[in-house]
Image (cartoon, rainbow over all chains, first blue to last red):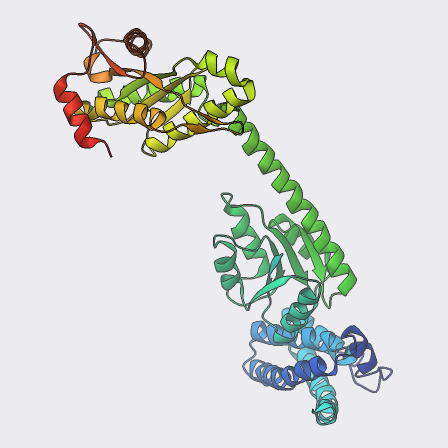
Length: 129
Length: 322
C-alpha cells in the first residue's frame, strides 16, 4: 500500500465527532429516549469493535465487513459522522479483502471510538434521571 | 395500520419503532429475515414492511423474493432500508420485488411520505380486489336474494348429478314455488313482495346443509339440490322445507305475511336414464301436481307418474321433523 492510500487522522481535517445537537433535534429533544439509545450504543459499539478485531485477527473479511456495517449504521444514526465514515470505509475495504487498508482503518476507527465512548459515558451520567 | 420492521441493529430498530409509533403505526419488530417471513406469511399479517437490506439469516432482498413468490396472499408493500447507495444494489433490490427503498439514516419526513405512497398502492389493491369480488358475486348470484342465479344453480346441479351417478349416490332436485305470490304483490305491493322473496330464500338457505345448493330459478320459483341425499329421507326433507315457510308468518316492514310453498321432488336415482333437463322437467311436473292438489304440499316424481308421498314416507317425515 502506498503512503498516499494510508489514511491517517492528521491528513484529514478534524470533523465534528459527535453532533449531539443534530441528534437531539431528530429526537425532538427527548432526553430519555437519547439515553436509551446511548445505553444500546455503549454496549453494541464495544461488542462490534471486539468482533471486528477478532475478524481482523482471523482475516475473516466477511465477518469484518458485517461488523463494520453494523458500526456504520449505529454511528450514522447517532450523528457520529466522522467515525461513521471510517466504518463505511472499513466496510468497503474489507469487502474488497484489502488487508492493510482494513487494518489501518480499523485502527483509526478504534481511536475515534475511544474518543467518543467517554463522551457517551459523560452524557449518560448527565442525563441520568 | 400495522407495519413490520425487520432490522438487526438495535439502535436503528428502536429509532424506527419510535418514529413509526409516533406516526400512528402499530409496529411489529423482528431482528432477521427469517423472522420477517414468519410474520409476513401469518394470516392477518401486516401489509406494510420495512426490511433492512443486510440482515443475518436472510437478507431483505431474499425476503422480498420469497414474499413475491407467494401470490396467494393480499399484497404486501415492501420497502428496503439501505445504507448503500450504489446503483446495482438498488436495481437488484427493486428486481427482487421491493416496491421502494429508503437510505439510512432515514429522514423522518421522507419515511412518512414513502409510507403514504405504500398506503395509496394498498388502497388501490383493495379497491381492485373488492371490485373483482363484487363482479364475481354479481355474475353468479341473484341480486335480490343473494342465492345462486338460474344459470349457476343449473350448472352446479348438473355437475352434482353427474358426480352422484359416478359415485352411485342420490341428488334430490326440488322445485319450490311460493303459492299465490301474485296476490301478495297485489295486496301489499312489490316492496313487500321482495321482502317475502328474500325471507323465503333465507329460510330455504338456512334449512339445508352447507354443501347443498339453493338458487333462484325464476320469479317466485326456487331450485334446491340436496347432494348425497338418502332417497328414503328426501320426502321428509322436502316437507321440512315446506314447513319452514308455512310454519310462521314473514315479518315485513308493513305487517306479517303468511305464505306457503309447493314442492315438486325428483330423485336422480329414479331417473338414471334421463338428462338433467329431463329430471328438472319431472320435478316441475311434480310441482304442478302439488299445486293441483291444493298447494302447500310435496309431490314426488316417479318414472311411472307423479306420486303422493306414501304413508310410510310421511310417517318418517313426522319422526324426522324437528
